[in-house]
Amino acid sequence: MQFESFSDFIAMGGYGFYVWLSFGSCLAIILGLLFVSLYEGKRLKQEIKRQMSREERIKKAKQTEAQA
Image (cartoon, rainbow, N blue to C red):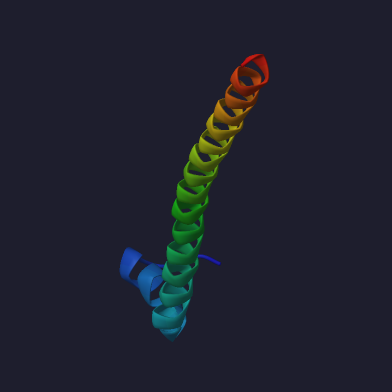
């Protein structure tokens, strides 16, 4: 589909509001998913580090207890 001018492209034959609203909504949802995924991934990695550290401390405590 060809448009005569940039304003015709923006208007999209009278459906521009709905077209651009749908593009904007999709973009907002995708960016939201991206940021939430990055945040949750970072949080999950921190939780795993904490868990591994805790398990290592418990393991050392048991070894020290067994030696005493």
